[in-house]
Image (cartoon, rainbow, N blue to C red; front, side, top):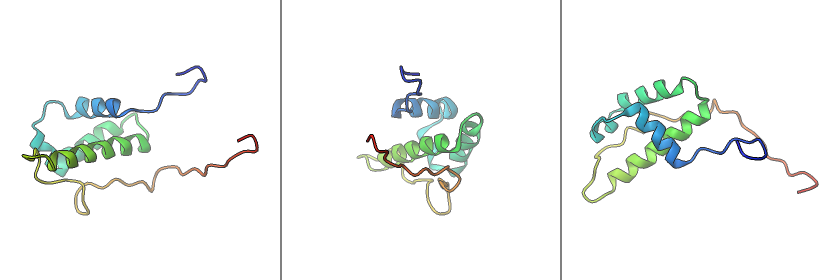
Length: 103
């Protein structure tokens, strides 16, 4: 926590570390299968709120997309699609930001 008593927001580095701790030393090609991503989601969900899991999944999706568009490509397919893994933000708590008089 910082001086104001607030937690520091998750960084990309911490999200990738969390992903690596669950996925481990699996081959990169394992990330093309929705089952591996769903396993990560189930394991990581224990002890984490839905928005935290969704942010980690978004980071993983971005990393997979990066790997697909390298030359040569590290991955050929993306498991995040309509019939594969989806990131459902409907369950996240929404918040309306209101600006106070002092701001």
